[in-house]
Length: 450
Image 1: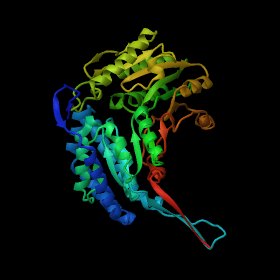
Image 2: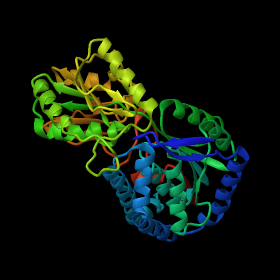
Image 3: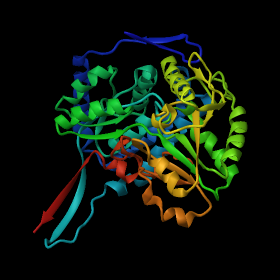
Image 4: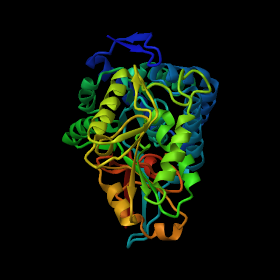
């Protein structure tokens, strides 16, 4: 039995009991039964259910957003934006899925050669709490359209969101078992992976969780996709438009109260713009409204749990002890942590070398572009990087220097349904979204006719 509390005021929300291992496998068997019928449907037939899902997303938007805000503290407007983004993902695949999954004719010495794309079976998703709907949708929707069925182990602190997601698919008319919520603990995940029914697993979460799940899947030679942590750099070159960079930097670091794997977590600023950036950024951060996430005017809510805020506080305090300076913020109360800017940062400090999951922005200066690249790459992660510059042509010629899954020029790193999403190094492997994402859990079958 475990309980969920509201991170804003620490009041009790609900109580849940994890299902047993036997119940979990029984649910997996329901997904397998559903798969036998679901895989035989055409892509067009599956997309009709996706259209129903879009309707239900809009119809149930209020209850979905409220549950997200209550359980993990996401400011209400940002919860609404998350639901709307899920709808856009569905619309993207409605337009493109048939083309992505169509086979290709290939010229060989045979009379006919081509490929087809066939689903693998039941896929397990292990999902995080920071975007409780969007993370699930970007895994589940392409997998389901491709003909797989999915079972999802959601983060325990958003168990209510997990239940609502299963209801959403049910209300959209999906056959029972196409989407199944598994209310299990992290310790129970390996038992589910071990089931011969499970044909693949996708995890979004911590490096530790990713290593555990990937190892369990690899031992059984099962496909896995990992979307793990990030420590994205936000590079501001000498010729950058400083005002545009500052405006973008606010959302890049502070949206979702800084709890995003693709948030900008290290600001690397040319020495000629450094002081100006810090001053302008400080002014913008000071204007951010913190408070009750149910208030539509709130931009900064609490962190999802008190222990997460305590971890963040420790990272900042240790960095200050090592010589860093807090320009603004730096204080915690319960699960709230003030939007914070830190200068005087060196590479050995926690706020630089560790992933910082909260509204804390370390700012570092550089002299040459080569130095900026070196600082940017000096991390175990490789999810994405933002580069602000007016010389687009030159930057395009230097993209290969960044060890990242994505480079965004004059824009914050974001997930877009049309763009492949994923990282390198300890940020994981595989890709979500776009054509790449819908093909992660399919068998690309080759057909050759003499």
